[in-house]
Image 1 (cartoon, rainbow, N blue to C red):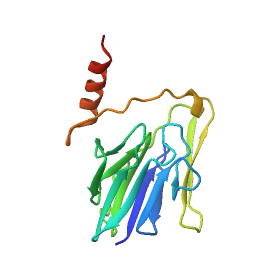
Image 2 (cartoon, rainbow, N blue to C red; image 1 turned 180 degrees about the vertical axis):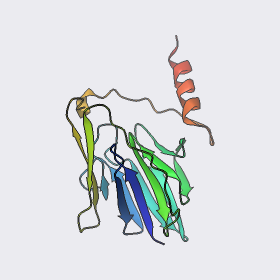
Image 3 (tube, rainbow, N blue to C red; image 1 turned 90 degrees about the horizontal axis):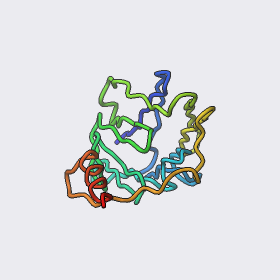
Length: 168
């Protein structure tokens, strides 16, 4: 199975990252297979892995969650064309060159922020971020309370649950 993560920069430029082994971590740490150096992305945010000829994503206890097709997931199977969102970064899943055409879903980081990507010859891919005016330091990010959610709930339900929980 040939798997790629496809990301579109703010300027519409497409970047492909190939999954070169059966399991890969995505997160802020330099030891992740796909490093995304943004405060909104956890150090070890999520994991992509293949099992039985299928592709899966597993959230690794991230603060801000892993979303597949706009639904927060803990672990789920991925299909060609699915979108995986980690913080502000949006990837489209391509499996065995399907889908052939991908509608650009751009990663937006805010005014004055640019995204540059590179993929060295090693198994690691890096999503480099340059924030010119709106740089966010890890210490500036508020703690996010984890919301327990029933299977099949979406991000809106999770937010509503959190807001009800915080009312006196």
